[in-house]
Every structure is written in C-alpha cells, then in structure tokens.
Length: 553
Image (cartoon, rainbow, N blue to C red; front, side):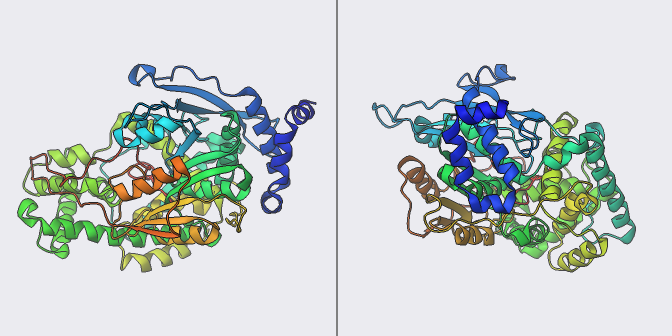
C-alpha cells in the first residue's frame, strides 16, 4: 500500500527511473532498479534534515550533517533500511576574485574511494583558496558510504586485535608463512560472515551506485554532479551506466579499470606491477639527492639501504612497534603521494644513522585508530569480494603472484594478503556490470589521470574513455601522484574548474605537464617544496589498515 502511494505521489520521478535505462535493467535485475526508484521517490519526499555534525565541536560551523535512508536490499525496498550519514557546506555564492554574486549550480557530491573511505570531511575543502570558486557555485556534499562508520558500519574482527605490530613483510615468503596467512585470511572471511550475517551480501559496488541515486534525490537534485576519486570512479561509472539520464556532470579522478574481466583479481595484479615502477621512481629521486640522505647514488643502492633497514627491523623492531611490515606500509604510502617522499627518505636516513624516532613517528600503527582502520578494511574486503568472482584455488594465487613477485616484489605479496579473504568468501558474488554509454546516452564527462599512477594504473583511464562516449581525458604526463583534483597541477585544476563551473571541456585528449617534484628534506630538517604547494585537505583514500586502495584500492 505504501509503495502504491509513492507511485502516485512521485509518479514522474519513478517513471523516468524505470524507463530511462532498459538495457541496464536487463543486465542488473528489474527488481533492484524498481527498488531504487521507490527509494529515490521516498528520499525526495523526505529530504535531508541537516543539523550539527556529531563531532561539531571540532569542525567549522559551515559544515552540517544529516542522514538519508536507503534499503539494505534494493530488491526489497520496504524491507530493512540503513542510514547513510551525509555532510554539506552550502554554496557561498561569493566570487573570491570580485564582488559579484555567483549563481548556485546545485550540489557537488564527492567520494574519495577505498572501498572503505569516508567523504564526510569533503565540504571543508571549500575553505582552501584553490576550491573557493567551486565552493561559491556548489553545495559541497560528502557522505559515508554503506558500511563505513557511521553508516551501518561493518566489522569483521575485534579492532583491538586488528592493529598488531611489529609484523614481517617477506618479498618472497616461505611455504610456512603462506600457510599462516591463508589461515588468517580464512578466519577473517568467517568473521565477516559471523558479524554481519545475511546483510554481508548487500555491501557491494552496485548498491553503492544505487545509494548514490537515492542521495541525489534526497538532495533535491534532478541530475547528479559527482566527483569520484580512485574507487569512487568505479561505482561512478556504474552509476553512469545505470542512470545516464540522471547525470549532469561527472569527474572521474584516477580511474579504476572498469573492464568486467579485471574486477577485481586482475586489477590487483596490475596494481602490484605498477607499484614496482613507482617504487623505482621514488628510489631514483632519493638517489638524485644522495648528498642529503646518503642512501645511495643509484636506485639499486637505495634499495640495498632499504633492505638493510628492513633486516635490522626484523631483528629488533624500532620502538618495539615498527617492523618490516610497518616499514613497507609507510613506503607504500609514498607510492600514492610524492609529497611524502622527503619525509620517508629522511626517516630511513635517520634510522640507518642511529635515530629511529622519525621512522617510528611515520610508520607506527596507533591503537586509537584501530576501530576506524578495521572498519575500513572490512568494507574494502566486503565490497571487492562481493563484486565479482575470485579464484578459490590457492594454487592460482600462488602461481600468479610467485611469477609476478620475481619482477615486482615490493607490493605483490602484501596485496595478496589484503585480498585473500576473497578466496574463501562466504557470501554470493555479483556479476560485474559491463560499463558503457553510447553516443548521446550520457552528458560529456571528464576523466583525470596521471601516467605513472600506481594505485589506479593509466590503462584504466583509457578503458573508461573508450567505454563512455563523449568523455574527455586529461593526462598529467610523466607523473604518478594518485588523485589529481585540487592538487598541485594548475593545468589539471583549470580543466576541472572549467568543466564544473561552465561545462567546458578540452579536446578529446588533453595533456598537462607534470607538477614540480618535491625538494629534499635533510635529516632533522623541515625540507622545502620548490614552489609546490601542499596537497589538499582531502585525498583519495588508500588501503585498509596500512594502506587502503584505491581502484581496487
């Protein structure tokens, strides 16, 4: 009876949602699409009651928070509901370069990736100078996706037992070590099922895309303007495929390869290979500054310094907390963001010179962050395991990654241990959607990518551009930072601003010169940036625990 009332009260919205995407309906199931339309109509009628944020005492008053209800299972829209927490800063309407009043263009919704990352703090980015023009025209909206605290948070393990250091990180593990990690992965998968129950199956990318449409409706937006980074590009692409008529503008920043055959096992293999290249980029940078760090004049010599530190940490962890695993995790983060390079190099140099304090400060895992870290890891695992089929035979994982580790040892096995719960995953798997939109089906969209991005290799941007007719790719050449929007490249930011504010796109494939590399920081010193400004307040998130992907991370 309630559904019938909703159909009559919001008939036009419901009809457009059900008739605009017949092909997508065939591919993903009519029941879920009808359920999305029902939920969106309900959310549009209810809106979002924005008020003080839960931790308002620590936040500027410009940001307000509220909740929107979405079905746990879109095939049963009147069944169990969960609440997504949403944050917003209203458009300022103030021109930062003049006195005129700026025309408000609606809401700009952001997702930083993960899976497992929260976007709740995104609206605060409007306080930064480089975002003020966009913040003048748009309400900046962030949210915690389903499963990410406080939005029906998932957990697979006691957080107090989650962050345990020091740990090992063998690049070529023994059979005994592999068996130990397999046992741990199976236990983690069981823990997910035991803690979440039957709800576990509903945490996946297709539902993240459906949630996004309900959020759009709750915000009162007839069409969505969206900025997705890293993993956010993947379910943004799913959204564009499922709901092309609901798209206004979309920015895909650092793109996950959406090819269904690569979700997610093959994407993770590609990521491990790409991180090896980025790790070499970092080592070559350190070698160029041998006079500052004393870690080696070549990339090979720097690697020997790193391996010497890892061996020493295996024998005696720094501060009793930092072992080879924590060292590897800290240096993996530098593969995402090159503004970390001076700090990581300084810490390694100081450690080998007898001062472990900078390394402990940068690499140790903090118990107070355990709940958030475990929640992030749980969502990451649940989404990627639910999204697609994974090899269930350990011999496949062992064969593929043993071969890969011969040429790409830096991240390969750590990547395996992160994803291995998917080999014994207890919930049903989704069939990946064949992302795509033909000519005229979707408004023009903007893709941003760096050629040497390791977390989401450049191939993904080329694949998404091929699949979304009318999309335009802006490439930062010879650079590898992950997440370009609002970063240090003025050329990239100019293209994004022109698109979001005026709907203007460059030619089909635009090129930007790389941003300036960071300058060195001497051990014990503050370092310098060679005119390079700091990264923005909000970054695409990394992997669970020590690093949270993006793009499969």
